[in-house]
Length: 185
Image 1 (tube, rainbow, N blue to C red):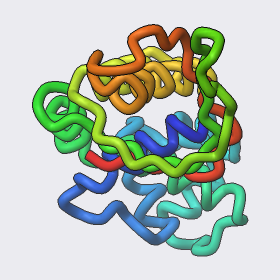
Image 2: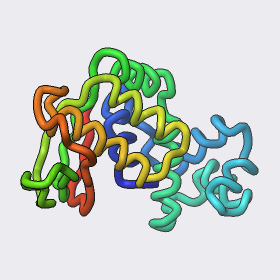
Image 3: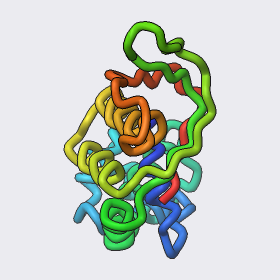
């Protein structure tokens, strides 16, 4: 996935009401139930169908680190779909989303202003329409670069231009060298 995509995913996962399965066997059983069989799970995780069956029966308990990471990611991606949808809908309609980032931010502006890129730490509440654009782009399979551009546009409008009250001649905001990025609904 991507830095911004992962950040959005973690924000949505904070809304879960029950913890996702922890053990490899429980995770595997959950995926088998969701995907309707061991063959589909085996293909998705790039392991043999027999290996999936052995995890389901608890004959194997400890997956390799790379498999454990894939397993956890796939379970969390499917866990509590209604709650996930509600959290996204709320953020996109009324709640908005908070972005907390430490990154290099700069902008293109008319000559005579200081448009020097510099590392800034920002915590900005983005209105619902920006949350909706981010989630819609993520659902549509946007790349990390595209999500970064949407976030930069949102920061331009909300932080730099203060909703149209200042910096009206600002042309473009650059959002690069992300050291830290976290979203909260």
